[in-house]
Structure formats: C-alpha cells, structure tokens
Amino acid sequence: MVVLGFNLRKFSESSARRFPMIWDEPWIGASPNSYISQPMSQPTADSPPDDFSMPSQSIPSSPSPSLDSQDPYGVTGTWMRVVCFLDYNDLYAFNFSLPIAASEPREPIATEEAIRLIRVKWQVTRIEPASNSNPDDVDEDGEAMDWSDFEGERLPVVHFQGTSRSLHASWDPNANSKIRERGTVRQTPEGEIRWTTFSIFHGEERWRSEGIQVGGLRSARGVLGNWFDKDYDMHGPAGPTAFWKESDDLEEE
Image (cartoon, rainbow, N blue to C red; front, side):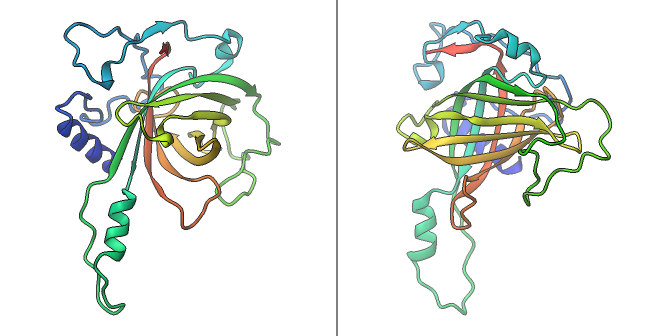
C-alpha cells in the first residue's frame, strides 16, 4: 500500500491532479460495510477534456438480480484498479547498460515505477455455496484449507466476469481486456475476504492477481494484493495492485 500510495501521489501530481488522491487519510474505509455506492456522474461543461471524463451514463447494475441478491460481497458494479510495475526499458538498462564485475556491488535502481489506472466493470456469473469440499479452497502451497477452527457463518464463493478500460493508456492491451469466469471472491478460514482475478493478454489468460480486502467485507478501502504471471513463472513480472468499488451502477460506454 505504501508503494501504491506513493505512485498514485506522483501520478496525481504529474497529471495536474485530474485524478483525485485516495488513501490520503489513515483508516478511512478500512472497516466492514463502509462502502457507499456513488452514481456514475455525467461530465459537465467544466470537466477537463481528458480521458478521465469520457462520456458515460449510468444503467441499472443488475442484469442478474437473483445472483446479485445472493452475493454478500457486492461484486456487480464499477471498480477502479491501479497496477504498478517497473518499466521493462528501465529494467533492461539497469541490468545491461553499465556492465560491472561480478565482485562489485551494484548501485540500487533509482527510477519511478510505471502505473496504470483501469476502470473495471464486473458482473456476478455464478455462486457456489460454502463447502468444506470445494476443490478451489487451497492455500498458497496447494493444500486444502483448514476450516476446523472457523467460527461464524460461512460465505459462498462468487464467480464474476467483466471488462476493463485504461483511463490514460488506451494503447496498452494489458489494461484493456476481459476478466474470465475464473475471477472469484471468497472467504478464508481466518475470516479474510480473498479476491482472485485473471486478465487477458493477446487473447489468452496471462496475468493473475491475488488480494485481501482491507477492512473486511464490503469495505470502502478496497482490495490490496499483487499481480503476477498466472503460471507462477519465477522469471515473470510481478507488482502491487489494488482495486476499490466506485459504484453499484455499470458505466455504459
């Protein structure tokens, strides 16, 4: 969150603050059920002529009201995602532009990370009842999660899909894609709310993200985690990511 907050602040400053700062006050939204839906507003005559005020209108958020009414996480709607990573050109220059002897220490890299702000529209597609035998309920090592010490009501597993659109880098195919059905949100044995998403690159699922909702169920603070290669390639890229809900409405483009 420190890295994302720093990068968002730098981006806000470099874009003449056309994108409002978030996380500028401690603990705001970091509690269960603190999220409050905001309507997707129409641009006004005073709005700056940039990608952040692209014409849009609000439409009812519930193409599947029966599913949405069973979703305890509040998935369907419009979300904002931020993704950060070290630009490949900077990484290459750091590693290869100034060859040094293997015995010499290398100076730390001193460059800003690249950032993408992405607006995402998600809809619930399927809901699985809570079950101790769910094959997807595994930990990072692939072992079945232990629910023996869990207390309280078990929540279902919610599957979702949708589309994403970059707000300032429309040329980047990584930021303009579809989220496949394998996007899920579920409860963990520790009571955390865990989100998993898969993004498409050149027509195939490529990037995966795993995150925990800061503050718990339906918190306004949103989800904080990491993105990485879906096949866990140890040589693949990785970086921090976060997303938070803006509205229960779906922005129609």
